[in-house]
Length: 386
Ligand code: ADP
Ligand code: RBF
Ligand code: MG
Image 1: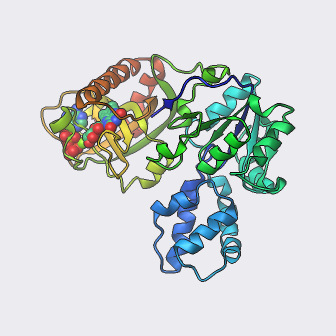
Image 2: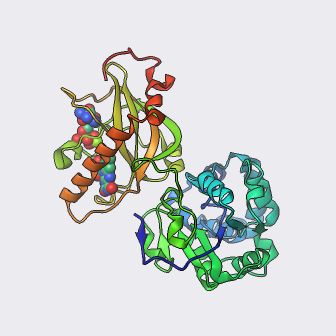
């Protein structure tokens, strides 16, 4: 949830972290560590993933060696996995909203720096895989260019110096606690975009905590506002997901009066890692019935505090019966808001209905309506009702 304190100081420069903030490094790191540990007969526990977020490579290696009692020194382990990471650099995808943020600041002439604990050569290799990124930063500072990495402020102070500005004119965007600590110690405003779910309280020293880059409001910091929101919705690069409808928590209709046709979270764990939690909308196709408007949440449903990240699509249509087991295909085309907690069940229900009205209306805009005819939705389906 976009928990914000009062509006911060006005800034003119932005310094962003790379791994976990602009790039979904954790998703690739998870895959690499999982298969490496499997070869040693050990099972990677994604819950220990928080031990590596925002650390220097050597600190992260030390944490894994310790957690899994590996028969290597941290240096040996690091030298074994480093080549595995280097092979995957161009497979690390931008996080939702990263491209949008970079383009926005660049086209508005806001100076931007990149500040990462990774060595400079790694940073340059990683960003070279993404069009237009390198030229958008007026300074790039790597962990090997300063004495101490985050949580020490050095990296951020050096970034400000290279942009010829004062630390107090800089806004830092960071996903890790070490990074937030570093930014604050540098005397900067810091927006936290936590990579680890459900840890918002640990980021209380940040000036503001947002759920994802999609939720940034640059105007709060005296920077140019995003102008791409349309009628309460944010167009996104569409993504597609589908499968048989499975049993959910059994409370959609019962507790909320809002049925949600769940897809298997296990089958889509990679897709779920890639997409930040929040409320989205789009089109839903049922193989034997047709294509319908749809609004959904992805995440841990803060009101119920689930331990599992789930997809909860509500089709905006009255059906005469359940359709468990039927093939459901979704084209997700826009974003509405972060998931939130609510003081009462009534207020959660009211907000979901409001989301439904927003989606219903937005999906008539040509921009979103066009995806109703996506081949992914219509190909194997009869061209029927709606
Ligand atoms: P569960 O916890 O098993 O998902 P829900 O109470 O959320 O149970 O109900 C979801 C089921 O209701 C779906 O799997 C589907 O079969 C049925 N259903 C009926 N109408 C709708 C609708 N408009 N949107 C989504 N699911 C619906
Ligand atoms: N659950 C929450 O705890 N917080 C939310 O902000 C939230 N938003 C939702 C928005 C939509 C459009 C839908 C369909 C569901 C949302 N839910 C939210 C999920 C709801 O809690 C979920 O459907 C039930 O938990 C059923 O499993
Ligand atoms: Mg459900």
